[in-house]
Image 1 (cartoon, rainbow, N blue to C red):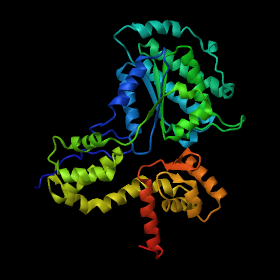
Image 2 (image 1 turned 45 degrees about the vertical axis):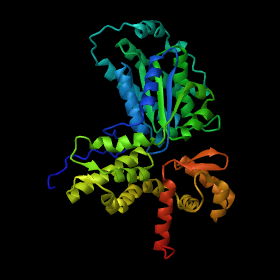
Image 3 (image 1 turned 120 degrees about the vertical axis):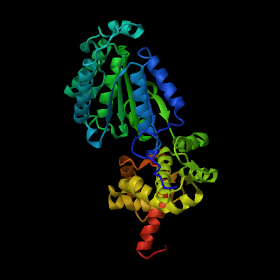
Image 4 (image 1 turned 45 degrees about the horizontal axis):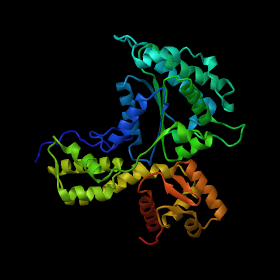
Length: 405
């Protein structure tokens, strides 16, 4: 075989939609139902999961589904700098202004009629001043600015014939309220504004997507968030969905995959969507380089070390490099502990640091998004197969230092 295979059908990027989206039909159907029930039932979704499970891809699908259902949308990927009332408000006001301008430019051929539009006449008779934002942090200019921006974009959306406005936030786990009353409360600022408008029957929906720590952050900010959000905790794909995610992109291509090869890949990737795409992409490139038209166990064996080097350097290592030496030391000790979960009692025995220091460093690793707390004394990593990575990393370090290879 000498002809080129064509474009690689696998997409191992950050938030890149695969050619075949497997195993998320139930979540999509539930989101569609949530939108249909609004504004009578608040349309809020909390989407959580480990890194690499496809949260951002699913968030993009939610956005597309909302637009297909005639909802206006605005989407923002949050960054650590947004973890203050001022910076979050500034970012969301800008997003709402852009969305308002975009909606205003849309010329609709149909009149704004129907159940939701008729209800919106009454809904939008509620003035901004009539909506009580009962949250202490909102007593101030940030709360007023955010409320006005949200109100304006919802009002514009409905007047132009949309069902309402959906605000989609990615990496939402970075929003955390400080415990002190005088501290920063960006999460309360957002949640209270959206909740107040929803109580006034404005058609606004909030989708927050992030690591498992998002759930705890929301509860600490406002206990009613447990009832305010529909929770969607997504994980690895089941066996059949994982198989489809791997083999479906090969349809209508020159490549076929041996059954044994498929089983080997599925055993390696453990159902995690990012890894499925990465293993597939590497196999495709290897097949093209070898001018073969089949994925075989022999082909995988020849490139497996390179795949692990890539996944370590692209997926895991960047998360570790940003940590302090002391935080990295704790992770090295954690590699020697049984997992899952990571027990603090085991870590205290494996580490040369005091138990107090270990607890402080664990807290910092949670804030850095490397760990999340399951319950008292128990933690898990936010990235799948991270424990195996730590074992490889520790082994390589020991080999460089002349330890056990």
